[in-house]
Each structure stands twice: as structure tokens, then as C-alpha cells.
Length: 208
Image (cartoon, rainbow, N blue to C red; front, side, top):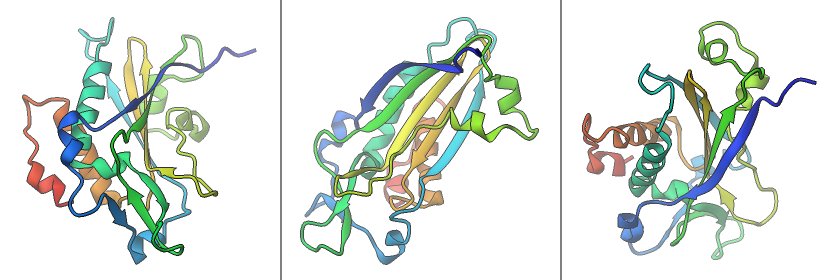
């Protein structure tokens, strides 16, 4: 029998950093879905996957995880609705909204591939045709609710390939944002993980 492909080392919830506690715009803490958003209500989540190769210095003992978590929390300050939940509006049975409240968070999974398993960094990150089933192991599951329970909008999975690199998988509900906004969020997260290299214009990202 083939060995398991990867091991889940940690599952946690990442909230917008404390400075975002007063971030929801007045006078409400809910964002109603527009006609254009409703079109994507029951569509599969948008999934994106990014590969990063370790430098020679970091290959032996990568320590990127704390920085990824703290920078994700910081990026969620400006994109706090992504940590909220999609629900049916209490005021109208035929309306939906993104509801934001204290304690909102995003599911974060950290996994590691197993030596001798079927997941090879060079194969999956290369430019040749790849096995979609293997790639899907690196993307988090964002369950689509068919009942009345609130729907999560974003999930993150980071998978380490020992001594080789890491993959960052993102799943986002399409009703929460379009491709442009999700790209801005990912850019803000990347910039916040390297604050000395690039300063994020919070006024610009808030307008997204």
C-alpha cells in the first residue's frame, strides 16, 4: 500500500488582528449581496494554488508559518468581510448578506508532505501537465452549505514540502468577491508578510 500523501499538522482559526475590532463600517455590520453577487450564491468556490521554493538557507528548517499567520491576520484588517459568514438576511427571506461580528475567523490548515509519497514539489510546481487529483490535495475544502447555517467565505491551506518548498492553497466563495478583489487581498497578504519590502496602501485596498 502506498504511504499517505500528506499529514495534517495543524488546524486553526485566524481572525483579523485586534486593530480591526472597530473596522465594520457604520451603521451596520452586514453587507447585503447585490444582484451580481447572488448569481454566484451556489457556485463552487474559486480555488487558487501558489508554489514557493525554499532558499538554500531555509530548506533545512523553514520557519515561515508564524509570519504567514500574523500577516494573514493583518491583511484581514482591510478585508474583514472575508472572515465573516454568508447568511440569509433576517430582515428579508429572499435576501442574503455577509454578516461580520466579533470573533470572526478564517480556517487555516498546515500540512506536510510525506517522504516517499506521491506529492513531488518539482512535478507539481513545474510547467508540464499535472495530475489534478494531486493538486486538489493542496487546496482547502470550503464546504458549500445547502441548509440555513452560515456559510464560511474563505479557507487557507499551507503545505510544506520538506527541504523543497511550500504550496499555499486558497478557496474563496465567489459571492464574496470577484477575481480582482481576491487578487488584491492576496497581494496585501504577501506585502504584509514582507513589511520592510513594501508598504500596503490601506486606503486603496479598502476601496476594493
